[in-house]
Length: 156
Image 1 (cartoon, rainbow, N blue to C red):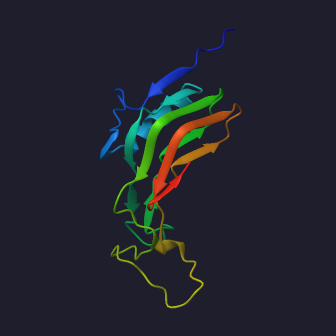
Image 2 (tube, rainbow, N blue to C red):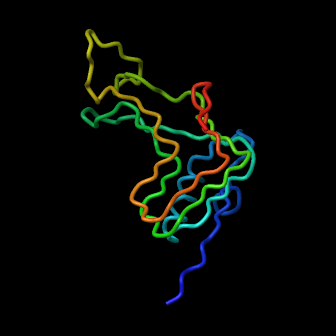
């Protein structure tokens, strides 16, 4: 039995075509590229230099969904049977402007101020999702040279 050759997926190449200028939202490109990498069992996720705008939310369409705005995860590495390398030297993922965070009325989408604290009703929650999720990978995961930016803060 031969070991499969690890693949390299470039998020800026077709079919992913992530915009590294920051003009267009690249969320779907990262979701699709990381899913393809995991489907292949692992390898390298190449994120060429540039600024990538990421992040989008789904608004609740009815009550009791457990959120008002639900953010999507950007890069998810789950169940990769071989090692994974995220190579992002010179790459920055920046959350898109206009994402909601805090408490919002699910029916109107407007900010919600609770009458008293603590306030724990998840149906009013707004999350921006996670930029990087790593779980259930028997091989190691290495992240190099990738900046994550949110709310005018940088995480390295």
